Image 1 (cartoon, rainbow, N blue to C red):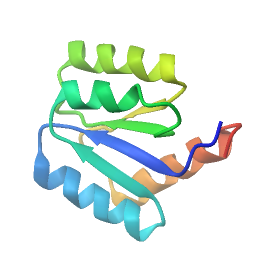
Image 2: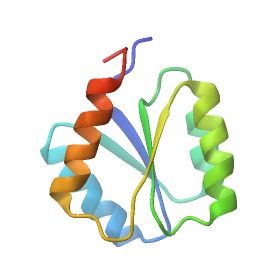
Image 3: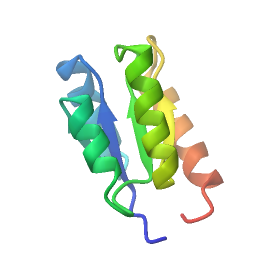
Image 4: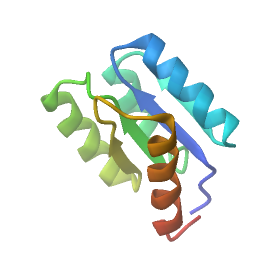
Length: 104
């Protein structure tokens, strides 16, 4: 697989997603935000487009389950962002997921 360090982020709080995107970009990651679950599902089906899907705590459980199924079929890891997450902790988790990924 030829994954880049691109991540897909989906949630219902645009401000929070944009803030997280900036934090990730400053750390050298490419984070893309989608505004609908349908768009997230479509993008996840593009081969080798993303290595990680980040789902905000604001996403309903049913939607998380569906997007997780799609991501799993595409070989994309999934990280569900908790409600209270510091930037440092988010980057720490992303780093550990990246280190555990066999294709990175």
